[in-house]
Image (cartoon, rainbow, N blue to C red; front, side):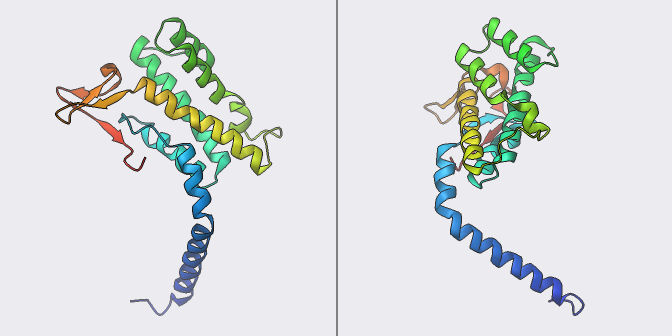
Length: 192
């Protein structure tokens, strides 16, 4: 039951709900098309950045291109730090040095190195919203698409997993998964 003192808030809430419904109905087709362009990798280890990684596709889907670019770059940075800590126990503060070290030591392919560096392009500009960032929506959408499409490709190579005959998940590189015996903490993206 609505409190008598709050009918204006209730009306305002209903107006906002109607506005959101209209926006979703008007943009549903575009959102579905955009989501299918950047579907996330279906399974990753449960880490501090796994939920943010899944949000990259959702931000792109919903047309939040600045946020999509910034979060995709942040996830790439977190992923590189994760790889360095797992493989070297330490990481450099400079992203490019970490990527180069991972590549040189054979922990990532040259293709992944290039993908990480492409995501990272203009990172400081988007992080600080410098005046040279794109403001045209089409340009932003294309940039966000390019960067966001690279993330699941990177994750699928690093976090390769497949379903076994008995339904168990076979991990391609177990060292990247928090495993305890036959169990591992994972972040599933079942809507992909």
